[in-house]
Image 1 (cartoon, helix red, strand yellow):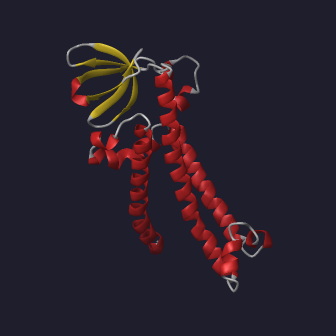
Image 2 (tube, one colour; image 1 turned 60 degrees about the vertical axis):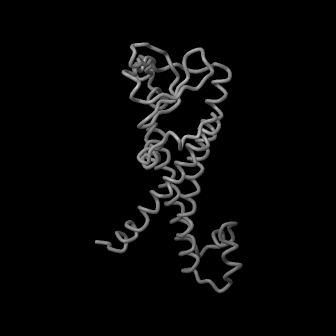
Image 3 (cartoon, rainbow, N blue to C red; image 1 turned 60 degrees about the horizontal axis):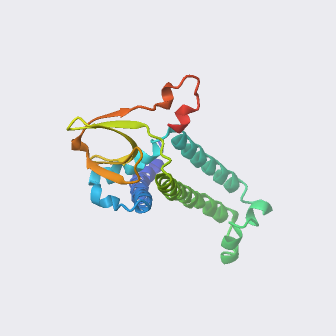
Length: 216
């Protein structure tokens, strides 16, 4: 059993998840800021803690893509490390600055440096995913609300029995954020005030639409 690997995992897993939580907060903050909402006022500690998991698993294709990219980065980084003695690796834009600062660095030193770069590469990729997703989604939703071009997928029934067709922007453990059909106003209501929510436009049930699994 590789105890050093277990020790590394015990160290990096909590730090990694803390990093994801911070990125989740930034992602939601950017997204809701574009809609004029301070999401922290409507979020509990639990919402913040599960935000990274919720985002990564919201669409299976996103989670699979992120995993494949991470594996690809690790593989490519190991490939470079194993070829650290070759000139094309030593003269690359990433490794040249290290060798200039450390002219007496051995092949093993460069190999260790290359392996360390994978942490920064993965961290940067995940940050780009969260922040890019928040900015892109924020602009998209804001534009569709302005143009009244929302895809209505849900119908809610409140505690008074009134039904409304809505575009559900987001939800957490305490609130629903939505726009009613034909409206340009964002409504925020407590979860307790909603008696029932129905998915009225479910692409998973559209006959012959195999791509619905990727876009729902």
